[in-house]
Amino acid sequence: MANEKVENVNGIEIDVEKAQRLIKRVIVKEKRNLSTKELGPGAMVDKIKKMIEEEVECY
Image (cartoon, rainbow, N blue to C red; front, side, top):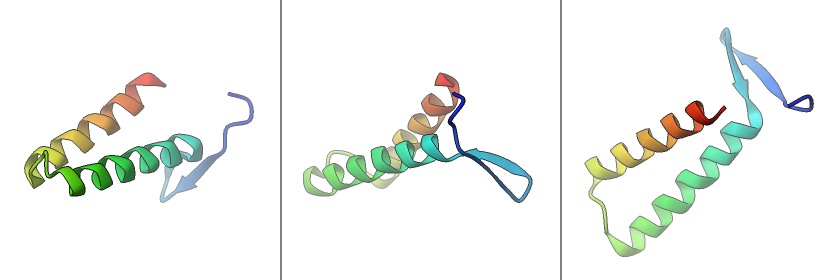
């Protein structure tokens, strides 16, 4: 963790690597859902919230 990039935005520290990893996961999930229509908008929001919570809890 010594080479982590952490930026301070409006007083909030943001781990750039975690943020980029999360953005990639969300984009892939959204793209897959657009083609399959597996989840509705509400379910997709819940899924993204869960992904964010998992990323925060892991580190």
